[in-house]
Length: 234
Image (cartoon, rainbow, N blue to C red; front, side, top):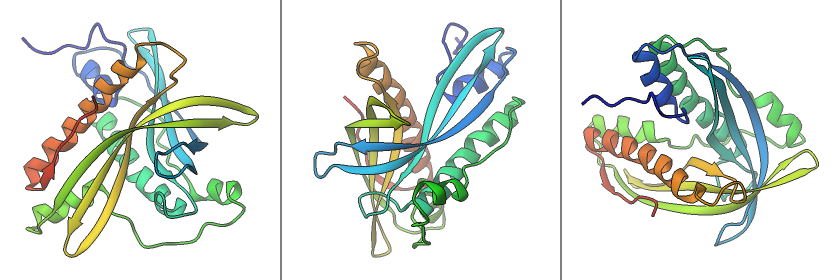
């Protein structure tokens, strides 16, 4: 039997695409935020800016809303530099926008901008070496280059700052440790996040979402010939 999302409240781009392909009326509006977040990492706590996009609209008149993290950047070496994070966020965002366009879902096509980050960081942004993305790894493997990836999922406690307000969050992050052509990198992907105080079962529900996104990445890595050691959120 063909899978259907008719009884599911959309919380992923693929849900919106599937619903549209099944004939549903789907509207989509996007809004962007760069959120200042304190990550309480097990190795060393650090502060970063997280690039978020909120998708909201209606499916056959029923409202939905979900947000997606596209990258995080900081001014030290615990995550990609902010100037790099903007580019990474836009590359992943453009993939989602292309999927929505192919499905015939209309939306305002916008991207994250570096100008807003210059204001937030007091002009401290500077250009750094371009960081790897999952797409780069896939492309290199398709061109015949040896690429090895070890995946390490982790739950990271954090505090999000919205003006004068603070919100506790848990980020489900996958660290892709890459070795290729004598180069070693770590690609960080935020797969989803949740407010631990919102509902007791959020932990399990969001792990399902994160694992579905990981499985899609694993399928693409396997198809490209990337050697990967896989792991999922428990």
